[in-house]
Image (cartoon, rainbow, N blue to C red; front, side, top):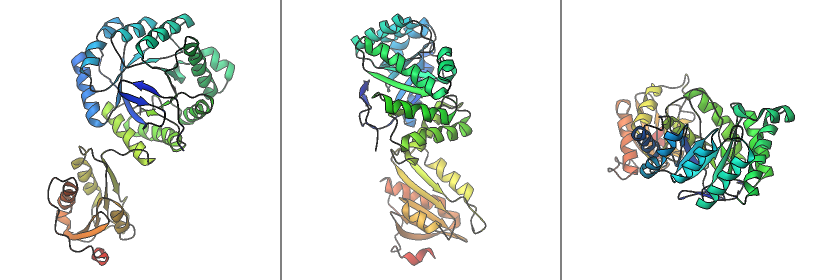
Length: 365
């Protein structure tokens, strides 16, 4: 069962309240470079990003947010640290959402002023608690990192609520996945706000994606989470790709090709690793949800290939193609990648499929 949170509106996106788990990322270009930032936002949108966050380090960047918002195909979130006046400026520039860090934004009256301005404009605020910038006194008082993060978020939420502001989103992030999971579980039990999930400063593309999958996957499988960002030391498009893989793995959303590939073993009679890589590269731009299997094992290959929308089970010198659970034909090993791609294109309506040999279950033996 999914936790049904309070709902807020980010641009045209309804967040929380049983809506899909949305995919977010953050630009890594200097915000002052408007065209470069917009170009990256467009690439993120093409990769499947649905909400984008931009850093606002100074007034110069804040004054350019209007141009970025005007040219962005995605709702724009202004990331604010230290100076509450930058939040007020971002609101004037028409951003769709604010992200404030309670660990460094300053006295209560500053937060209240931002909340009143956001309320007037109907703009939600994400209270973003990061372990690395947590209020020192809270960590000392609470001892446990997760408890301190939740306390920090809820204290800040109380400040916003005290001036009648309720369009609140919470995020509680640490580079430690178990601490992140514990904090988000506690917050989910204690408050109605939608939760943005992420394991912050997770690492490089490979290690960071794994760490994020552990933390985000655990929460999503429990029905916790309304938006996600996979934070990687890599191009932001990689963050978006990883996010979609995580959502697909937990059965929540699918976008593009889900490739099932045999890990290979001593029974495999075809050089399958380069085959899988070629197929993955060829289908990287497909947006329609599709399950494709590339198998080389007589034990699991035919079964896995049948479960996919399109699949192949390789053998000695040949492969059997499957489409929608049925055998369609045998092809020579040298042609199997192109023939598999041909079946995918046919399923996408881009060309006619190959000849169907009748779907005989024995054809794969």
